[in-house]
Length: 231
Image (cartoon, rainbow, N blue to C red; front, side):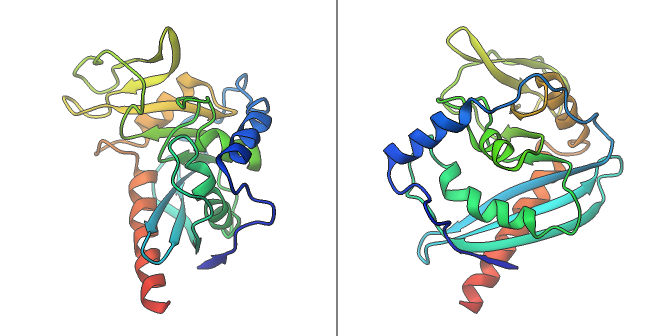
């Protein structure tokens, strides 16, 4: 487990954080397809908080994209680096998420975030922010649609419907299990939306949420419990 300090110069106010978003948003790459599904490696990242102790734990779990077996994993724990502000959650999470990624013994391949990419009020959610800072291909797979609207996709697995900000499509509502609530997929960086959907389906052979997210969620929660005990 890596211990993380808040980086020097990290934004401390909402105004500073929004200025960073504005600066970095123009670096998002949207014209690359990304790695093909079921090839190479795919990594899930997730975080867990202990607000009482002002701690955040991040996990990065690398899977073989073809078999979904765990190849490597790493965790990091640090102080919460930014207050809770809707639309600015990446500033609470990125220092520890990057530390967990940096601690991996192998390249992560595609990174799947439990959250948003372009499906964000400022079109720069965690997946986009992390992708720009690391250069890695990233997608966001969220449990809810945030502030956006959508029509219900068909009831069968693989059906999707546009996730809309007014008339703008910012992602897709994707059914990963027959008759089960969809997940909400958006491009982060260096991946097309069609490829993001295909990756999400490849990562959900049994459950609604991707295996990357399920494994990273369990690991970061465990790391947070261990940090609380040891701290």
